Image (cartoon, rainbow, N blue to C red; front, side, top):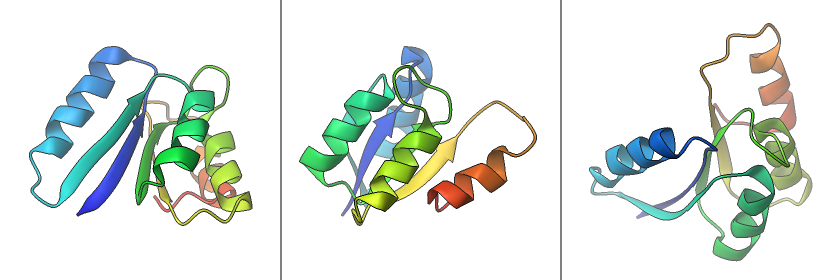
Length: 100
């Protein structure tokens, strides 16, 4: 079972992602949070296999979250989901440690 933590500040998007992921028999959504700082605390506490995070959130961005996870050598893979198409986001995400 792949354990997933969701971090998305928009409740509707967060709920939709959780519902979609719960349809998969090999995924378990172990947490769902609305800001980056809470995501960081929950990543340390829950030790998910994957963190699916928005790129722009209050208190800590998805890029900052990915970098903290990488710097702390936590085994979680980070996947960043965003509707923003700003130049440089992909490069910055990969440099911060995002897997996708």
